[in-house]
Length: 251
Image 1 (cartoon, one colour):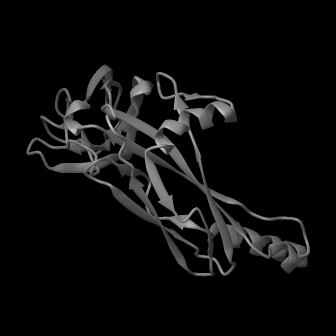
Image 2 (cartoon, rainbow, N blue to C red):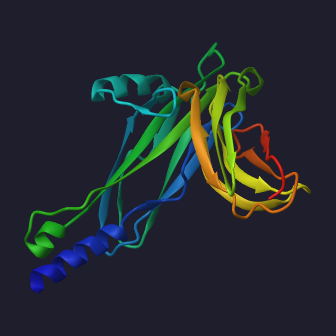
């Protein structure tokens, strides 16, 4: 019973450990600084460090498995274009820490988008000594960092709906990406008056190398005529474009 109680405490500490305040970091010449918060919700001190990595994708949004060396090499072009602080820090119990990123201008930098992933690894301190066993939960948060150089108007993105299959109370389709920049947004079900009926999916991302991504939604809340599925761009880095897919018939 005592061992079971100790393990329960460990998993409870892990579930309350470091959390972050954002799911994406964006920098360009007009948005030069961004910071986000790392919060320690547990009663144990945590030591955190930051590393950078790259996640590559194939067409269809499949993950492209790369070696550690390949991921580091692909991350380097983005890393040359920002500064950050602090690089390491210790979180006291029930405390917070802000990490600041700033855009680093390069002379004659061509319009382009660069991406890396910020990995924040937080390791609770003193657990081994507390319970006398070799078990230490490690929390790693991975946050995409997107950097755009040059003028925003020189980068573009467009989405096209294809392979649409509408059925009773549901729909599936392919969203094809065209252009030189990533696109982020939410899928909403919208009625004939342009009012949002339901949030279908939040924080959707398509990177240029993905080419396309397949989606399927239940439309049980669709009632009436002239309804649409709308992809709405979100975030400070977007053009706030809307891409609509009209639904056929009456629900």
